[in-house]
Image (cartoon, rainbow, N blue to C red; front, side, top):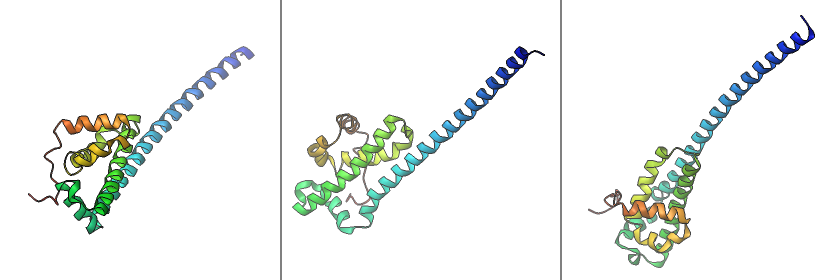
Length: 164
């Protein structure tokens, strides 16, 4: 066996080792992507839960939101301010989730429940607020939300506090 033969065997072994390394790296990348998407969903879920928790843990805020069903003019100036900032936080949190879905950091079908909640809110108790405040959000999100709201798919949603 010549040095050239040994060199060829060495190159073959190196090529095989490179393929194994690339396969391992591809597997690691896939696992990392899955973990990142899972973490993104977990954080999104926590953010939306904090929004809901603020109502369940604050009776005054719950009454304000129920009162807002009669329009923003039914609220005192203090109540309007609290309602405004609660809505701003809720919708901004969903906007961040929507953007994560656009980036592919979270699967679109994973945010459908969040979407139904926020679009129902914007179609009902938050509709007057949305019309007055939507310019605070990105143009892309405004177009997305307006399209969903105008679809009418969310207009009949009723939250538990609404008087029927």
